[in-house]
Image 1 (cartoon, helix red, strand yellow):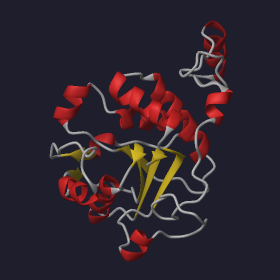
Image 2 (tube, one colour; image 1 turned 45 degrees about the vertical axis):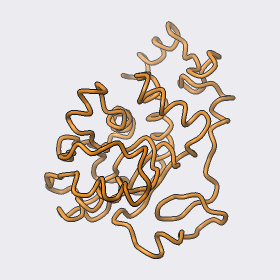
Image 3 (cartoon, one colour; image 1 turned 90 degrees about the vertical axis):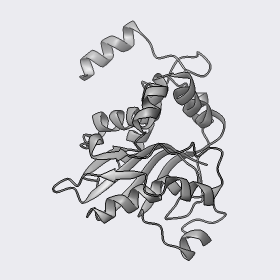
Image 4 (cartoon, helix red, strand yellow; image 1 turned 120 degrees about the horizontal axis):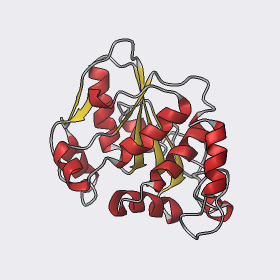
Length: 229
């Protein structure tokens, strides 16, 4: 949609905060007060982005075992409004939340000196898509694709095993549960990929996807997520 169309749409249908129904800010369905209530992670691991007490440090887990992904980059902590947006999209089918998250992520990642060759959402198994009706991470990835102009090749990365939900599992169980669950059909001239997700918890899913991509020849795998638990 071009700028003229955006202006017309904004005048006819003004942006309204999804959280509190106040006027939206910066072409978002999120007001300035709610936007400022999103909790930024001030200090985090330079590899997995887990919260730390000091900046520019590497966590003990990443020092002990280097993950397959090169870097996790997230915007906010998984609490408060960030958690509410994610759960509203995933469990209440509030699709406007995907646009809010995708727009905020695009604003953040547009300042990168080097952008990846492609972005791909964390895939859901076909059965899970049938049950839910959509893939929330893919919706976020589509907004990133439109706003950053980075190609997306979602059909190349698939989940071949309908794994149990990760939510109720501990870190060890998550790693076992997700092992071998993904397949990647290698794409020509794609050497760097950003995997898009709504939230990174233990990083097990991200690590398994990165492992799958690198086995197929991808040289760099970043994880882009809206929040970090």
